[in-house]
Length: 333
Image 1 (tube, rainbow, N blue to C red):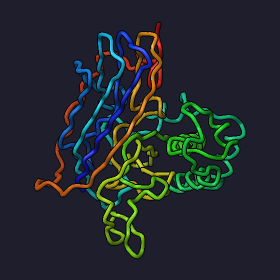
Image 2: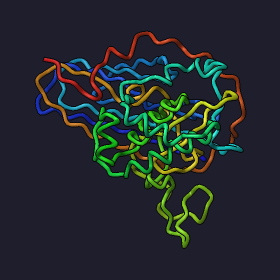
Image 3: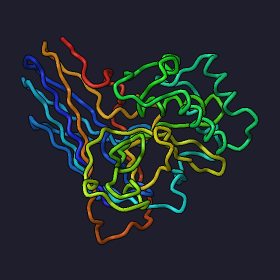
Image 4: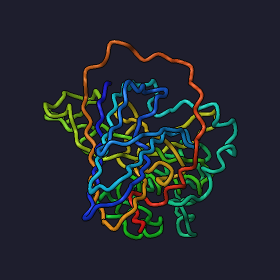
């Protein structure tokens, strides 16, 4: 499947600011299962863009705007070719993933957005009681998450604790991912957060809505709808769990559908904090407002086909992403 993706973020300030620096994690990975055909990042006002690979293997693009400005528009455009796999849920490992679960010790521990208490530990133990098979534990964790949460837009905020999330009973994709990761880690299964794009008009269904008689989407289950070639979405999140045998099992707890050619990976990490789409700072008295949109269009496939190719060595990070502390924009006087 050929997908063209346009990510647009616009900052507006109620009075001019002196400078702004942002780092973006929105570029799709070029990896097995998907090929990045093209990528372009532009900003207005124009600025220099620097790129590096972070600790988790995600491409980070840094841009800095110097001089007074009262608006900043960032547009990232990408063309991606995805393909089906014999088992769409199995993700081939990277050689650096190691050959033992403890090589992923960071994915068994608490992280900034995945912290737990005794109540959540009890939920995890009850959900996976008597299960020795890792895939069964993953299925049980997803089922528990879907019992505990009901999808509701704008019902939570970035950084909500898992205890408050469960108490509220509602959430969005990142909340489903964080809770599932917490249950898996508590059950002894290394799990990581995946940030990406989902070609779906409804992320709770995981497919593009169709006008066909059976309501099927564009994933091969039924006829294509006349409006399904383009959707307006936001970035999406799902989960990968480590399986014995050096494999990652990909699951999407928001819609409980297989992770396949409708999913486009940006990057992975311990949780949202490691793969936040935008993080930045600015200097000046202005207060910002932020608007972000993602448009995905299904295109005719290119003539060339996806064939396995050697993985290129990744460039080391030139500096740490922790330089930027706020989630999107943070005022500095």
